[in-house]
Length: 337
Image (cartoon, rainbow, N blue to C red):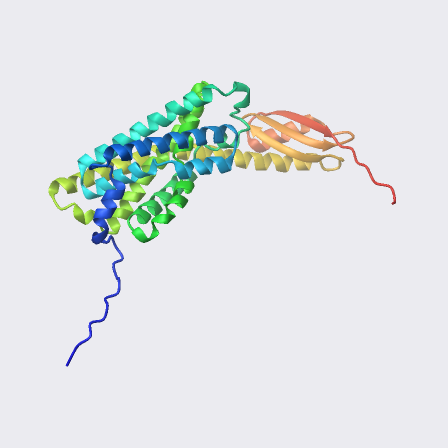
């Protein structure tokens, strides 16, 4: 009596150790192809820096997204956290050294590239690609944690490797570094610090979230010796400490943003009440510390500004200087055809 052996379905939900060799070959830059892969890495990094720098300066979101896809900086960051999970100190140090070299390269190159751009075309007030990267908050950290986890899951599975481009778009690595270079060239040290904080947030979040995912799916089983286990433990302690440290300024920025939004909302409500009974309509209200700038549109007489100032001071709980800007409105009606 013959027996028929049915094919065994794939049931591995964790890391497939049959994929380990390909995983290591793809992630770690080592072996006989090291020089060629390093040349490829820095060539792509320079191309991405050119695209990102001028994309930021031209305030072009599509161009900046293109730079995110080209940039190879995610690779050595993922290699760092994978090496820590595997307990390989030598691999982790080589990967982190490549990250540092890449960071310095992008900042210096973007500094040089922005040197040829007229200063009058660089705005730290109206350029959205710059302003969105110099005041990061907790949302940036949460996004980076999600992207880091997704990236680690993707690199651990050969069948979904094509999805890595989406992670590159979701998380911002090279563009913030380009903003650092641009800001330094313009002498905007606060902006440079904010943009570097965004990069540091993304970097540490990838290390932590990516490391957790790789450990959970079973890559950490390769850390069998005490030395390997110690490297992994120390690495994760450093990841957690780093994320905790960047959370402090991020939380402060977020808190300040919430306070500003609350004050703007209260001020808007008071301005709308102040305009009742007039022909004016509110265009914009902005609370900037103790100055409230109000733009209104219409014709005729306005109510006394002093009354608005007194009410705003009462609501905001501090003295304010009110600046009312009026825009004359012209209304025309067409004649019958």
